[in-house]
Image 1 (cartoon, rainbow, N blue to C red):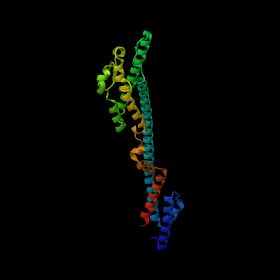
Image 2: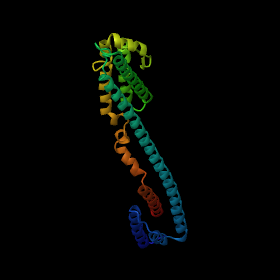
Image 3: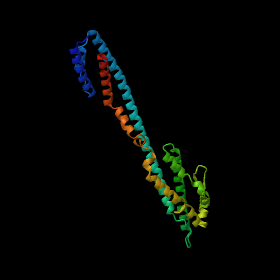
Image 4: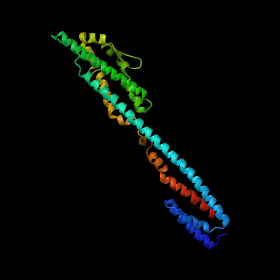
Amino acid sequence: MATVSATARNTGLMYQFAAKSINGSSSNHSIQGLIGGLSSSKAASAWSSITSAASTGLSYATAVASNRNSLSSVLSEYDSAKKQFSKEYDSAMGDLAKAAKTLQNTNFDVAPQDASEEDVEKNTKAAVNAVQDFAKKYNETIAFLKDSKDVSKRVAALGNSFNDASYFAQSLSTAGISVKSGGELSVDTEKLTKALKENPKAVENALGKNGFAGRTANKVDNAQRQSEKMFPSVSSMMGASVAEAKRMYSADTIGRSMSYENVGSLLNMYF
């Protein structure tokens, strides 16, 4: 049985050791000093408790380190996915914006009075190419948004806003364009060429600045302004929880947790 003075001395040592351990500067001499004040049987039991605590602490530290690595891996993969999505999103919107602008500025009056046959064919080819390129970029964009709808509610909502060509199917048909069930545009070049030569104004009304190309350009402009919000960042979803998780799985936390295990064993030993 330890004397009152020995117990008091050892208790003082114990608190010094606890303070040093929690501050990351534990000393084996402090442990030895504490153990020295116990009987041989209790000393053996104490060392056993400390060894067990150390083992438990090591297991915990290993688990925390593993979780920290897993957390780091998940965050890295998420960041990579966000970057890839943003790259594809910006590319799709950029291409469609360019195609829409070209179509808005296209001269649909391919056969003005006194134009040569060569000029008519040149104008017609330029107009047809502009319509085909726009339709291609439009279809690629809605396909991308459809494939990415699970990324966020914003992407799903944007995809729905773009997928509205069916509402303009009748006017588009005057330009030789049909709307498929999935919202894609299909260009009949023969019908388009005929419409350009016979009724260019109708084609311009359907596809030009005040038509489908103009409406699409406005949607693209809106989509580009909110590009950064399409794929939510980790911090925007979890807020302070991200920083808390990083602190929880830090190397400092591992060391402190092991120290608490040892201090706990010492407290159990004396009280």
